Every structure is written in structure tokens, then in C-alpha cells.
Length: 439
Ligand code: URA
Image (cartoon, rainbow, N blue to C red):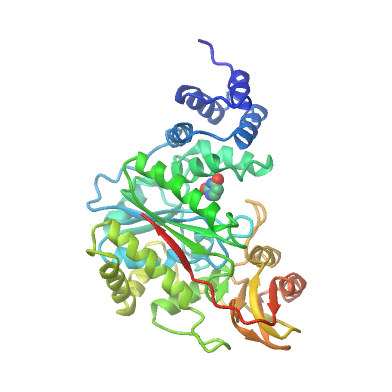
């Protein structure tokens, strides 16, 4: 029968389920330029409103996955494992957990993204290290993972070309926030990595894609069912993004924080506790679950202890230095920001919360992040966090410090940051970092 895109759009518009053949033909037709943007946009909007069944979401994932190559890691012995985070502000755990897991002897092939919108991207953070090159061919990537057990690259033209094109279209047609589209987009890219196991860090809260923990759990369960449908081992951690993670958000500053953690340093803030602690703890928890999936450690406790020993012994730092070397990065030349602008509060009370997304937007204003894929990143630009939810503050206390090379630009983000915190008199308990672990 002749394939008519308008009939597929009509079926979905009417709430019918689509077959794998129809979905595949549509996706491949679009990827190859035979179906125009306007028809793909219409289908995306129909999916947005009518949703997809589990079978349809699996079919969409499969069609997007097979629009390109699946990396063949058969020459690399061992259980290959990766982590995917749904994105947040100051979310830098990949730079710590990758070296920990690789130092434990488990291969970690990481195909990472760049920051877009209010969330940061691993590649931008690594590229703030002078010389660090993430552009490697797939054969080079495989060889580096075989030799060093770790390598970070960006999405190549061979990996899920359909997703690349569809994601750009979703961005401009208001169809990003659709569960089946998000699931197929994330999982097609992860499955294309040729991994055996995946740990998902699904974030919820004011700085996350999913604003409530219930939405995050639904996303996690959907992602996990796709991973399992492909025979992959998978664990999800539901983690709090109602406040930024760690001490810094901003590329070279986040590298600095990770290096400090891997060198066992602490940074005691005005609240009297270590501001690196949440980054360290989340990195260790995620590492432990990656190790557990790979069969390293008998239970969570043992895998966590192994991860923690690797971190404190300096082996993770040594692996990170090796990683910098294989990518041509000169860590000793990590640039330092030239200027600082403090943001203080006029209020007395306790920190009840942050508008974390606004903090990410302030990051875009100072060029620590980008609003469009073509945006330029200033590697040293970033925001330092002095307080966390539950801390007591008084007028004149520093809440944030903006860092960067352009003082006027830093100054222009002050009003937004001033409004990005809720301070109120009653005491409030600190939220837990990890809400739930789904296995
Ligand atoms: N990240 C992705 O890669 N795709 C989505 O659709 C959403 C987040």
C-alpha cells in the first residue's frame, strides 16, 4: 500500500495507535528529507495531545535508533555502563563518576550533550579545559574506551540522525514536553551507545524538566521499560533539583569543584558545612549503582564503599588526569574568572527554596549557558552558591557570587538572581538529595 503521511497524522490526531511500520516509515522519511517539516510538526503535535502506547513508544525509539548506527563495543571486554541525567543546574556528576567507575575497571563510554536552556552540558564543562577535544570518530572512541575504559564524545552524525532533526523541530514547535517523545529521544541515543547497563538520574523540582517527583517517577518508569525492552540493565535515582547542586554552576568553575572533590578537599560555607557535599554524595551514589549493575560489589553498601575508596585514594583523580591527557586537555591551564560580583539579601530568615530555573537563566545571561544551539559559551562564567535550603540568613549575607570576565554582564544578572531565592522566617528541614531508587 502506498504510504501517505497525512493518513498517519490523521490516525494519531484521532487517537488511534500507530504500527511500527507506519512510525518507522514516517521517521525515516523525515530523516532522509522525503517528509517535510510541516508534516512532521503536525505528527509531533498529534502525539503531544494524544500520547502513545508503550508499544508505540518502543516502536518510535526503535525507528530513531535505527536511523543511524549502534556503536559496536564487541572488541571491548566487560560490562559497559553509562549514566544519563535529565539535566539540572550545577549538575556535574559525570566528571566524577566516570573516572570512579573506570578506575574500578568498568568501561564507561560517554556520549554527552551540550548545555541548552537553563541546564548545563558535560561537553561544555570539559571543553573549558584548554585543549580538551571531544570530537573523535566512532572508531577512535571505541579504541579509547578499550585502552583507557573511559572517553567522552559528543553526538556524532552517525548516532540517531532522526533524533537530531526531530529534537530541533520540537524545540520550535512547542512539542518538547511530551513523555513518549522525551523517552524515545533519550533512549534512542543511549541505546545507540552500545552499552549493557544504564543508571538514570531523573531530576525533579524547580530546576528540572519535571517539576514534581510524580512526573519524574513516571518518566523514570517509562525510560526503564524501554531500556529493559532492549535487554539492558537499568536503575533510576529520583533526585532533588529544587536547588542547584554543589558550590558552582558554570563550566570551568564546575571542573574546579570536581577536581577539588577528587582531591578530597572540602569547602566549608557560611552555614558551617561542606558545600561540595551534595555533589560528592550524588556522584558516589550514582557510581555505586553503575558498579552494582556491572556486578562489581555484592550489594549497594559494598559498591558504595568501593566507589568511596576509589575517590578518597586519589584513583579517581588519576583517572581524570588520564582522561584529560587522552583528550589533549591541559588541566593546569584551567582558566580563572577575572571578576566577581556578589549578590546579597536584604531579608532575615531561612532559605525556603530557589527558583532554580531562573538561576539557570541567569547563567545564560552571563554566557555560562546558551539559549540557542549556536550560542557562545564563556568558559569562566558561572554562579557560586553560598547557601542551601534550610540555612539561616540575615540582611547583608552573600547568597550568590557571579564570576566571569565581563563585569557589566555579571552586573546585569543581579536582579534576576535576587529574585531567585525564597527567604521566610520559619525554620525548615533540609530536603533529601535522593528521594527514591527504582530498580
Ligand atoms: N533530552 C533529550 O535528549 N531529549 C528530550 O526529548 C529531552 C531531553
